[in-house]
Length: 391
Image 1 (cartoon, rainbow, N blue to C red):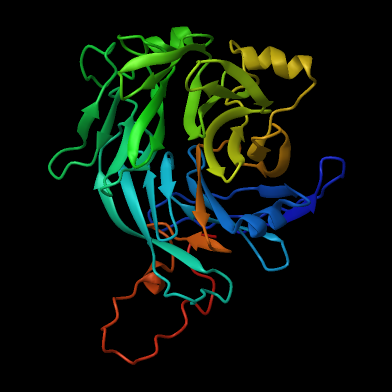
Image 2: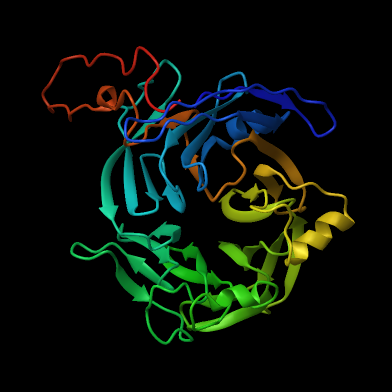
């Protein structure tokens, strides 16, 4: 998928351009009308923080990378993964949950090597763990390097199994047994010092999809150390994260980033996020939050619908950069067109401009290379002299 975006700010009229995507050989033919817009300082913020971002989009099925050129112009790119959902990323590796698999992608560039004279990371799929449709949500990597993930369909925290679809590690005490029924809509995972610490769920129900009846105010935060509900009364909470003495979460049904004091339990609204907020990563004292349009005409049945109308706000699909000290939205990146929702977001540190390639992309063979011999003095040709991968 090729992107063409415009620079601007909230007060400036912005023009946009249309682009189309090329499917892989095993995918149905499809094309997308995609435009991007971004705040005037978004690219400079990426440069200042020395990070790039990667996010997933479930409905359109892409892993989206956002890097930056040396002149501060953001560079988005995309790799096709059907039903891209929860992810966790670092400088060399990305794990991505999809409908039936967990993909492991590895950076295949050598230090100081560039692909297409621009990209300083290039992530290619290396393995796929077949899980079946377990509705994978947020992920984390523990201190031993094991992948942890929320298995929403079975209401548990799980890890990879060598012999089965998954290995359950923990379930809420209000869940009587593991069943493929999405009973409480367990979804968010907060890691602390290399271990799973907090999770969020949309209810404490224990029957088939019982969470749907509690979307307005039945959401909870659970401390995995004590197995106790430490905060409740939330409307569809997602993406718990720890910063200092506080737990932050996205109360998606109300549209707010919320701060909870870990000692007193006091909670406060930090920022209103115009859209369905789900997916968050911290960069220093900033929270990068994904927001999405409603899958329906409005957010009917959720408190956010009334708040949007009362404030004359319009929902958007994109990323918000929020300063946790002030609660201000200081930068933003927006998608228009056929990308209407984002699922999760990760940060890749100490790089400028990443991209990736999907498992069915044309040109995948050009992204495949073997490991080099330790004694080899041969010079490997530059990676990709023409455009390769998903576009």
